[in-house]
Amino acid sequence: VGVPAGLRGDPRARVVAVVVGVMGVSSALRGLARRLLGVTRTSTYYLPWLVRPPVGCLLLVNNIESRFKSEFNRGPFPVAITQYGADGRIARHYEVMLADPSDTADLELQAAPGDVGVLTVSGERIFSGSYALLTDGRTYSGTHGRQEYWDAYPWPARALQSVLGALLAPVGRTVPAFTRHQYGFVGPESRSYFLLMNLSNVTNRLRASADGDGRAALVTLPPHGACLFDVRRIAPPPADRTTSRHVRLEGNARFNLYVVGAGPKDLDGALSLMHVK
Image 1 (cartoon, rainbow, N blue to C red):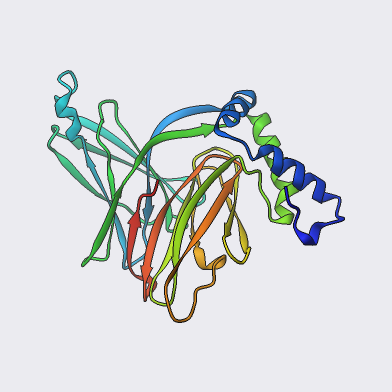
Image 2: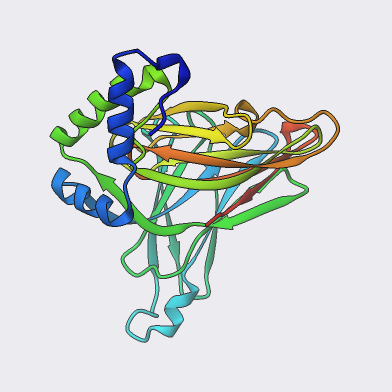
């Protein structure tokens, strides 16, 4: 594992090299590490939300797939929604009732600390995906959520994560236990933001780096927290065109992202929201 030039000869360099090298693990090793650390997983359906006037956010809830399940196709269907702020704290609870499999509920989300965050949707007999829609009253963009997992670390594992994070953060590094790759656009007329979401109960330090000039940034997300990351922080845009940049994201705990697209007015104009693999 390479060591940043500015750290050569620094005692912390060995810590960086060893921890980053050992923890840059495969999926199989991550599973083993999860068991050794005592991490438990809870199946969770989640989506992003963003409220930045004039752009608001609607949640579209349905259960149309239940019509194919004879034992679960009779309403009503209660649905519980939890809205987390960027700080990871629960901002609001919502409840909606779907009368039957063809019913749909439109829920206007309220602003919360940080203007972005995570939503969870749950219901005992809910089988369909929900959709988050961004709209400025004239245009809209929507995407679906994901049925995945939220990881819960016991306190000894949280303490270990805290110690390792404190050692690596001063040198702009994190434990690369989870990695994602994504392309973002930068330019004078359009650009990408990554809506980063921490899917764990530990502080998640994410390192974002762009191919080409070696720039990187460290982002700290509180447990269940989120942020809107400007790709321009690590990939300065050219003055005369829009271009795409490959971004590598590494985190010490489970995370995910959606892509938010902005135009000439940046975050003060219409925005798009895109699910990515």
